[in-house]
Amino acid sequence: MSASSTIAETAEVAMVGAGAVGLSLGIALARSGVTVVLVGPIDARPTGRTVALLEGSVQFLARLGVWEQLRLHAEPLRVMRLVDDTGSLFRGPPLDFDAREIGRDCFGFNIQNHLLVEALAEAARAVPGLTLRAGRLDAFAFGPDRVVATGPEGLSVSGAVLVATDGRRSAARKAAGIGAREVPYPQDAITTTLHHDRPHRNVSTEFHTRAGPFTLVPLPGTAEAPHRSSLVWGMAPDDAERRAAYAPERLARDVERQSRMLLGRVRVAGAVGRFPIGSLTADRLVGPRLALAGEAAHAMAPIGAQGLNLSLRDAAALAEVLSDAKRGHEDLGSPAVLDRYARTRHGDIAARSFGVDWLNRSILDDRLTTDLLRGAGLLAMGSIGPLRRFAMRQGLMPGAEARPG
Ligand SMILES: Cc1cc2nc3c(=O)[nH]c(=O)nc-3n(C[C@H](O)[C@H](O)[C@H](O)COP(=O)(O)OP(=O)(O)OC[C@H]3O[C@@H](n4cnc5c(N)ncnc54)[C@H](O)[C@@H]3O)c2cc1C
Image 1 (cartoon, rainbow, N blue to C red):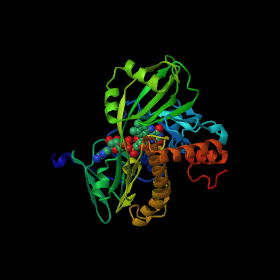
Image 2 (cartoon, rainbow, N blue to C red):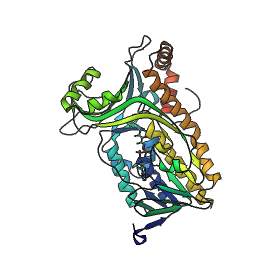
Image 3 (cartoon, rainbow, N blue to C red):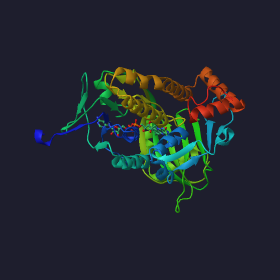
């Protein structure tokens, strides 16, 4: 690459990784008056994967001005049903979390991931103060006053702080020497879109099987397919490889069997995605002139719809900390500013990561004591109203309420 084809961009905040988290954070920062250069490819290919966006995430996306458009493609989730299908001796009846019990119409909305990324990318292109660059960054120099990041195609960006939203393999996190505790699960998830005979009635059903969660999540109907849901099915990697290669009819029969015909006859109607599942927790959320957000900082199993919701809370918090710092004429990459972000997010990230990891491991683990603990926990949740309502409110808006009630 010749020097003449080098592109150099400077902004107050440099960002790497334009997934849902990077794009939404970039928009939030630019809308609050902080200049941003965000580098990364936009990948809006359908993978059959959806995200259940809970109330706090919907409010955040509404503040960014993208929710109105997304709402047209999203389906409300009124009931989250957990079914213990592990065959455990201590399994209880299905546990329903019903949004009406806490005075809400719904917990949130399910939407196809690629539509979310597409809408955010469109909004990002239109926001003044945000420069989007396709390409990659793979070398990072964290200097005393600025960070400079460069890519193999001659792109160079600099800012007072680098925000890494480059996913679980984060090159920026590694370059800064921040370690991460990674636990692979013996699991892959396959994802797809299903058309089915029976209505879903806005109930998301998560079967906990010994191989992993099997979840059917409502999607909006269309003129040709009035009843649609998305599938997230965790299983041993060999089984996932085999099933992802099945003809659609054969996969549909397996889904009917696994769901006990809950939705009647099903048809696989779209791409089938396959994702390795594992948990990851970065040792620190910030480093010198670096902040991590989203899966660059924490990743978890797709159980209980937590991953992206947690990540969007990182994005909202970091945008607030950095825009406050700008208003206060502080150095955006200073340890004082970055520590404020780390302190704000520590409790939420630690609690979610622990909870999701424990639940996912407990369904894979067939020891009696684990089954007993999980069975007792779910039974308590089912029979103790205040506890169940507390869990629902915390699921929607962590920290919104200190006491069960
Ligand atoms: C099967 C499945 C189902 C899920 N369901 C839910 C759900 O219902 N609810 C929920 O809240 N969460 C869910 N999640 C989790 C959620 O999808 C993730 O938390 C979310 O996608 C993470 O977003 P991210 O932007 O942090 O990372 P990513 O989506 O991985 O984005 C990272 C981006 O960085 C880019 N990048 C990487 N390296 C570089 C580089 N060197 N230079 C430039 N760019 C780079 C990548 O190309 C990518 O675009 C699910 C996850 C899976 C696997």
